[in-house]
Image: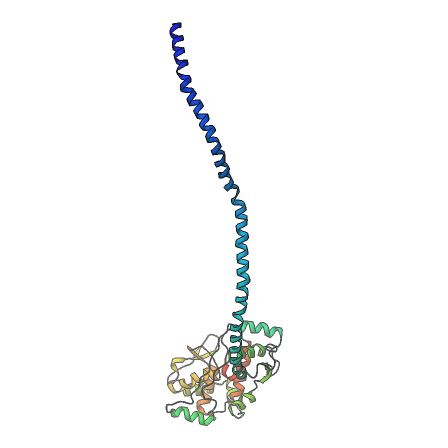
Length: 326
C-alpha cells in the first residue's frame, strides 16, 4: 500500500509539475507580457476619464465665448431694428391723435376736477356699474305723423323737445350724477365747467317758455275725487277702475290705457318721468298724461330738474336723461 501510494505520488508529482509549470509559468509570463500592455490601457482608459473634466470645463468657456460674441452681435441688431418701427408707430399716433383731441374740447380745461369731493369719488365708484336709460323721440321721421301727435306737439310747442336725442357720453353722465348727489344748489361741476340743471336752463335748451304748471302740481300734492275721475276718463278705456292698494295708493294697469294715450305714455316714461316699470302706471304719470292730452300747462324743465335730483339720490336703478346731460 505504501509502494503504491509512493508510486502514485511520484507519478502524480512528475505529471503535475510539467502541467502546472507551463500553466503557472505561461500564465504569469503572459500576464507579465500582458501586464505591460494592460497597465498602459488602464492608464489610457483612466486618462480619458480624467481628461473629460478639463474638456468639460473648457467646453463651456468656448461655448460661453460664442454666445457672448453672438450677444454682442445680436445686441446692436436688436437695438438698430426696433427704433425705426417705434418711430413709425409714434408718427402714426401723432398724426391720428389731433382729430380725437379736437372732438373733445371740454376735457383739456380741468382734467383733474372730474369729481369734486371724497364723497363724490365714492359715489362715482358706485355708479360705474349702472347702465343708462336712453331717451326717445318722434321727430324727424320719414312717415307721416298722426294727428293725435301733431296736435299735442303744437299745443305745447314741443317741436324741439320731441326730436330724437343724440348719442350720450357715458363718463360725462356718470360724473354729472356723482357730483349732483352732493350739490347744494342747481349747479354741478362737470369736466371743469359749471352746468346748471335748473328748470329755466332746461327750458332754454329746448326753446320752451317757463309755463305755469300749477294745475299739475296741485293734482299731485292734493288730488281730489274729481281729479281722479277726469284723468281716468281721458286716459283709460271705458269701464276702467283704479287699482287701490291696502295703503290707499292708486294705480292703473298698463293694458287699460287707450292706444293713443299709450304712445304718449311711452314718450313720457323716457323723457319726463322715466321708469322701467311696465306693469302698472302710477298716479303721478296718469295725471301728467292727462295734462299733456288736455293741453294744460306742463313745465318741462321743472319736472326734469326734479327727476335729475331724485335719480342722483337713488343707489340702485339706471341713470336717466343721458342725452340731455351730454
